[in-house]
Image 1 (tube, rainbow, N blue to C red):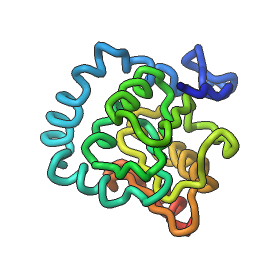
Image 2: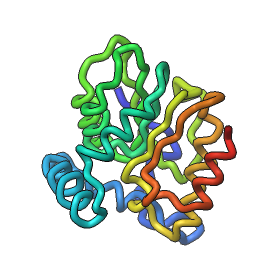
Image 3: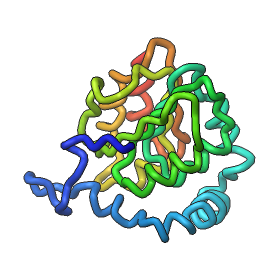
Image 4: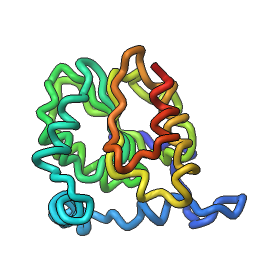
Length: 192
């Protein structure tokens, strides 16, 4: 079941202030497109454009940073990392994405778990309601989201401010360095 936060759906491409919203970037991830997503993004783009092997580098990186109790994955894509990371059954998993197709794909790929996977339809340019999540989380992952958001890198750092309240003490925050600016990384690392 997908929990839809009121602030998460934006029908227009412009906000009330005239700034670009994230809705158009999320809308392209239709069910048919997601069938090609892994091949294109995780095989071709990651390997040849970003020169970072999904299988040899990113999956082990993701796996190494999943906490022992509660994990939050932001911008879930197809759930490829969740499936290939071998997340232990004891870990409670929560997913956040602006696209319901991605949440369904990721939940399906993750498969049945002892505790149901929490799915939250939400735009991370707005704060995530702490009451709506199973947090705090001892690990949060953020792969392949920032480059999909409109605006300059500095404006995207708001995502990190929105995640700080959801980190448990000593939590692990994981995002490939190439997608995280130094300033944004400093913001999240100061959470402890």
